[in-house]
Length: 319
Length: 171
Image (cartoon, rainbow over all chains, first blue to last red):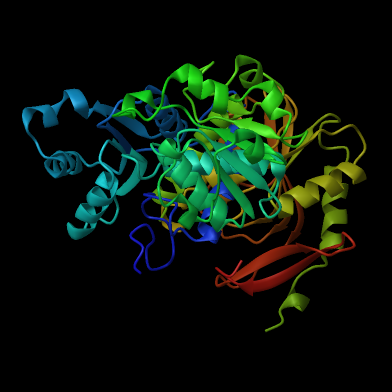
């Protein structure tokens, strides 16, 4: 099948999802991100790769953190960054998504970073640009509906590789609200593509997608069973704002069964790392003692996230 | 095509380069090699030259002027400058000086770490063909090869350096 993310030379032209992205492309992004980590440690935290390029952050759905990390990444590449909070802008005056895009193309945009509540919106934009012959304009999916959040998946992979060096012997446990989590979906695709032998999904039936086992994941409803022997624990945020209907009795009840405490963490390997895509709900999915403890790599994830986004943007801009 | 005979021996050129640098460079000058050939040379020169020379390495990939045409290399290395660049005296080291574009990129990158007191340029091979106004301070050997060929420095398993000629664009 033709992959709209790659050109005929196999170079990345859009980043829409990790699903179907070849292992060598994922590996190349992770490798490219390594030298970008050190850019943040210098006097001048900037390299000139995207000088003169204009990056539009199109956030149809709020996310201060993701928008900020993309903005920092683009600015450290010397791009000009324009942030548009579309939720409170033209679309509320009736403009369609693609008309908004056409207007920004007319302003000579080079890259769109798109967050949208509807799954597939970044795909739609990428296809629209190809149809219009705009092959020099690139789209990065910054989270679409329940579908994908590929840069978060990549930064999770980068973090795991940084601490565990390789994937071929790892047990990774993903815990909590997988149903609403595009982060989990992207991470699972990435982990399986890179050959992770054991990926576990831990959560109540109501918060696990129906067909999740078809992704190659082992399902556990009992957290203790699922955490046993894990090298990596990925806690997901309980997305209460996305929950329609009674999927859960209460946040307190959820913490009792699926919150990560030090006692539960002790079931994993002694050198296990604890990750969380943020924002964290302390006392809901993760105990403060764990979030701030020595196994936690939650803040390094944030730092690595900027380097990974710099790598993606610079690879796209040079394709 | 074996043009190896047209090239000087890399070890002999290195010895000549070290001889020219000895006594001429500052006793505390930082030796900064441009990846990958210049990095090997910087390590060797640090062993050969008297004084206490801090070592550094630069990957110029993020500063290249042909990035939008050629993209990023598959294996970008991490620039490491583990000493204070501001106020330091630096000898920038590269294997082959040709157009001068890598040197331009490396100097730009150095200034993003600080303002050195001085920068000198030491190269194993000067093959002419400059497109920018850079001249090396120290040269191991001067050679001329056809425009469609690249001179490539290789490091053998035992650490010995060797020069070869390849079709340009293949490296």
